[in-house]
Image 1 (tube, rainbow, N blue to C red):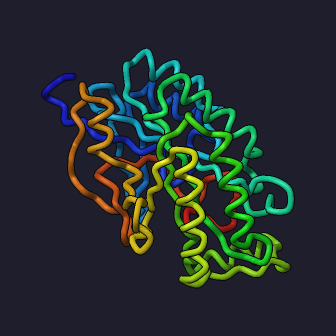
Image 2: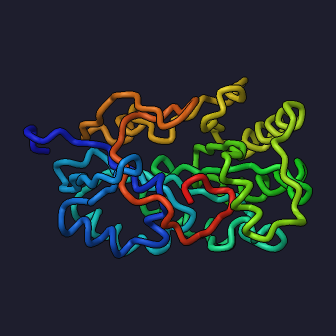
Length: 280
């Protein structure tokens, strides 16, 4: 790696689902060597350097990685370090489909996760079970049964599972109302409910050899559950020892444990249309 370039972790992306919906655009960015990014707090546009010497590691976030596979061939030829955060909640099916209308069925998602894990390594793929939403249709038993089903299916293909509870930002209830979810009754969940759920998750994770981590949920980093860092520079440095990984904390919101990265993508562009999403 060229010592004159200061490499960055590049996050693809917290703002939108680039792997699922903008994989071709991402390929074009790789070809040009840069990603134009609009600052959401003022509108000024800047660029993120995507040349191989400028990228320490790509951290991808998605609910559907299947469309990204052509780009993986390009990234592999470049020799990039890749890490995948794969969100699979089980909501994209049956009676809960309105919460994830543009997301593949969880069976399809787990098949794709397994392909990623086999192509690279279980160390390079983390499963996000996020967000957990309490409602009249998704009680504690729903979440425990769903988690157990997914954990058994993903056994040996992932080592880390990151979970969090739904954050009801001001716009989220409005989005849920516009989605026609009038017969749903959403609630925050009491501390007692959350404790019951967390204890159940811990037991299931132990049986399937998963390391549970939190995302912006410090209160639940208890017992065997670690305080999570989705963009985890020390972890990335450990699995990619030949890379120069910047080691600077840079949380993006309250209780976030992430390390510094350059995020690309634009808010309000994701086509998954999940009504709970803060990035819509």
